Length: 151
Image (cartoon, rainbow, N blue to C red; front, side, top):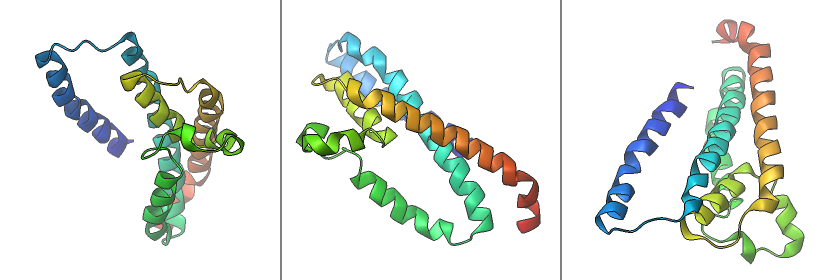
């Protein structure tokens, strides 16, 4: 939890520059910007669930730390960061909802720049993020007693 809170604080500091630019240019963002905390919360829940899983697995299986950068790179390409979700064919878009970060990226893009709302991605993404958190917490609690013995 400590690294996630550190990154959250870093994000808060990093958002000061865009806020200062908006104030100095007298640009008033639309009301959609109020949805950004919802999407940041989903990103936090997803990151916490993945962290719980990977930290517990890393203690038991030392090679997990070598697989994490590869997994993160795959996750990046599976998330519509460099491309909008609308570029995907219709038959692949329901699978995009299984990636919670796709809803986060599309939601932040929607909140800042407008465009199509990510309503179709929101429910499956939130369900997967919550499932990742609950199962990660359950697995971490399950192996927590034996982690000190393995280390």
